[in-house]
Length: 158
Image (cartoon, rainbow, N blue to C red; front, side, top):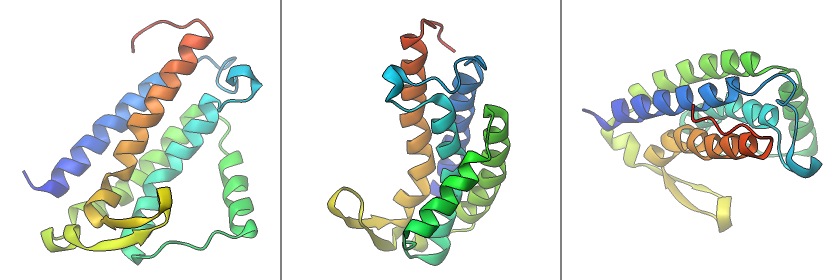
């Protein structure tokens, strides 16, 4: 199996898992946040809907977008349009299709290329690591959703 195919397969699996958990949250709890201070499931779902396209942008442009107050406000306005988990799933699937196409068409040599990203103090990331970001992000946030569920009393394993 090619690394590219592995990344796609693992990302698909992680997406299925996070949406299974997010869809199990009732409409009355989807916007609830722990202590009125933590993130809600809907907020997390909005991020997960968008994250595959961030990977596409980084891989295809090989550059970090400039974050201005205007661009961040525009991104927030777009995310706020997503008012249900189902809308987030639909957008995520659209964005994942784009990611899968980009990742599947990467060469082995391209996977080894690096670009600097400023996260956690900044370092060079391989294109392979960037392609894996949505998978990692889904796994991370699935844990958050499961924890939120336990806080409001849902102890089911989905």
